[in-house]
Amino acid sequence: MSPEPTHQALDFDAVAKKALADMPPETRFGPKDAEVLERNAEVLLSVREAFVKGFYDMLFAHPETRAVFEEGERAEREKTLSAFYERVVKGPHDDEFFAWLAFVGPVHVVRGVTNPMMLAMLGYMVEFVREKTQGLADHEALVAAFTRLAATLGAIITYGYEMAWKKALEHVVGIPPALAERAAHEEATRLFPLRSHGRG
Ligand code: HEM
View 1 (cartoon, helix red, strand yellow):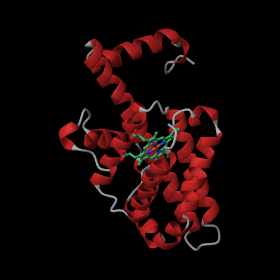
View 2 (cartoon, rainbow, N blue to C red):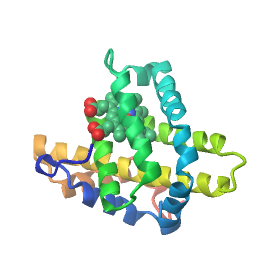
View 3 (cartoon, rainbow, N blue to C red):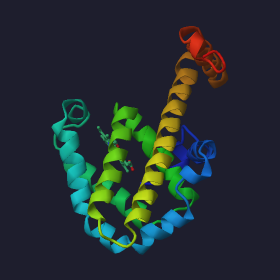
């Protein structure tokens, strides 16, 4: 489940730290959010099966996401998502946790899962918690914690995705990451000249 240092193509810890550093602190999952989750662990774990079932029912009902899966794979996927949910709820939410999240992103790149698919399911996660924790004293705090968790995961996943592409460009075609970045920036400026800052 956790990243294996000997086979690392990406420095997961660095990916997580860079993604977190780019986020204003108020938007990041933090120690207070972890406390709220841990305090409500029992109720959150009581709906774990429903979370997993709803997640995969949705992915299997939509042709674009269904196409990612191989025959007979669902049971295994349900197990890993269930373990993910448990780790999210129980913690510990330490550096290793965020590095692991940075590892989970590229795992999906390998299978052709797109960023829109990933971000969509982070939205599902927040909505699920909103619905299942209605009426609890910590309802607002739980929704806020999961919203920040989704933003944090989204930041780490999309950053990991970008890093995986840069690594591939470097490894396969020999383009150094800094050059790829400059080319992307120049190309974007060429395509959208009027949208750069201060030009309306
Ligand atoms: C909120 C978004 C998601 C989370 C948190 C999540 C979480 C995970 C986790 C923890 C694993 C196991 C990683 C490992 O330890 O090897 C995994 C694997 C996988 N997930 Fe997701 N997932 C998400 C979205 C998706 C989506 C949208 C799809 C497909 C449309 C998907 C398809 C898969 C597949 C195919 C694997 C197996 C990868 C492999 O080892 O070949 N996931 N996911």
